[in-house]
Image 1: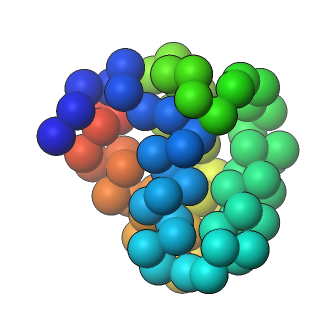
Image 2 (image 1 turned 90 degrees about the vertical axis):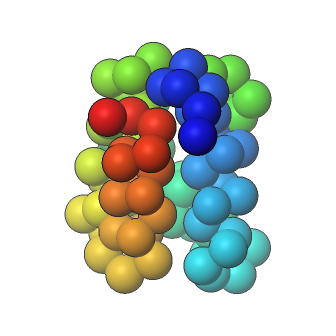
Image 3 (image 1 turned 135 degrees about the vertical axis):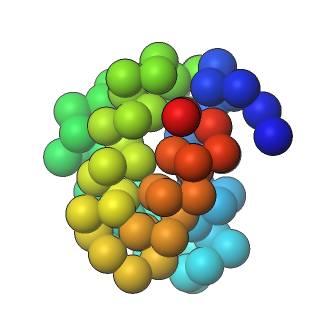
Length: 78
């Protein structure tokens, strides 16, 4: 697994696409980004605090968002 510097929006999006359709993955990610207040490019590494906030918002969404948020948090953020 990668370290926390390797977390990008693209990585989270790809993980979401493994669980849901493309459009639902975009919607889940966009909603979590808006609620967490993150502002960064899709391929830019997220700061640990931003990645933590994004994972928490994904987990709050429940279902596949929860699964992906937890997996990313446990693998990369923690």
